[in-house]
Amino acid sequence: LAKTTQPISMDSYEGQEVNITCSHNNIATNDYITWYQQFPSQGPRFIIQGYKTKVTNEVASLFIPADRKSSTLSLPRVSLSDTAVYYCLVGETGANNLFFGTGTRLTVIP
Amino acid sequence: DAGVTQSPTHLIKTRGQHVTLRCSPISGHKSVSWYQQVLGQGPQFIFQYYEKEERGRGNFPDRFSARQFPNYSSELNVNALLLGDSALYLCASRMAPLGNYNEQFFGPGTRLTVL
Image (cartoon, rainbow over all chains, first blue to last red; front, side, top):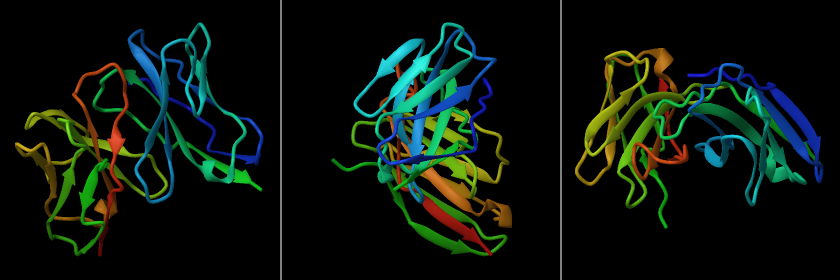
């Protein structure tokens, strides 16, 4: 499994765009990049997944450069309810042993 | 629509005891995975079951076992509990073990405290 590195924590003001970068230098050809969000005392929730370039859905965008050795999760105009831990995972689609790491704790400030 | 459900929500046990945690997947989902999340860390994969068969196992001792029933619900059993087994135990379901997305749907977890 490719190891990932993320910042331990980030702070942001409400209404700002937040970019969380994940480093995955050893990503394999068949690996996808997946992001999950977790609130306290809840299970993680899938946010977005991508393989290359840019993926966008109703809650976030995922930017992946050509070398795929890093990726950036972009949250537009965050609100207080976006305060959570965000996990970057790298692995084959359908992999049953996804490695969550310690994640990035995002705190949104009023 | 009901999501993944887990029971009990909280549990307190003493060292040496055993515990059984239960999980019901989303209707139509045939794959169930179990994760352990220690405070301050991300979830760690324990087991995956699909169609009642074990499809994956993480780096956990044999004290941990699981099974899946014909209705796709699952149980996680932990024997000879240690203090270090205190954690949030998460169950996740998905349509099939292999798919185009790494999207799993997690339950709220069972908080196990070992004294």
